[in-house]
Image (cartoon, rainbow, N blue to C red):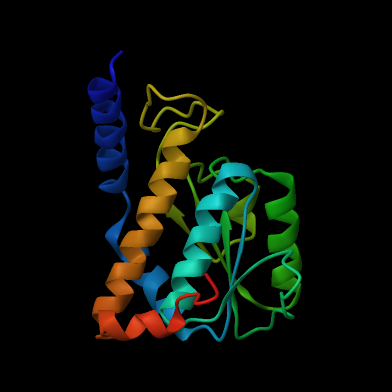
Length: 185
C-alpha cells in the first residue's frame, strides 16, 4: 500500500467508527464531566495514552482532571467521575480501579467496544465505540489496521470532539484558554 491509500483507509475507518457512537450517551457524558468535581481516567497501553491527552485537554478547559496513578492524584469521592477506557471491557487493572472507585461512590463511565465485559456490571453506563476488539464480536466494525488501533484512534478523536463540544456548551473564549496551557516550555 502507498501512504495516501493507507491514510485514507485509516481516516475512513475513524469516520465510520465516530459516527456510530450513540448521541444520547455523548450528551450524558458531557453533562457528567461538567457536573463532576474532579475527573479521573484509567486505561492501559495506547488507550491510556489517548486518555492522557484527554486529561490534558480537560485541564486546558479549566476542568480538574487526573490520570489514575499519577503522583499528584488526589482521593476520589462521591462527587467525582472515573472514565475507564477499555475496548474489551475486561482489562484487569481498569476493572479493578473501577471497582475501587465504586467503593467510594464515584460515578464510573466505561468507554469501550464490548458491552458484555466485566465493566458492564460496574459502570453507571457505557459510551460505546463499536470497533474491532480482540473478541471479534459480530456487531463490531471491522478494521484493516493492526490489533485495536482503530479503537485508540477513535477514542482520541472522540475525546477531542467532546472537548470542542464543552467549549461550545460553556461558551468558552478560545483565546482565553491559553491561560491554562503549560508555560514552562
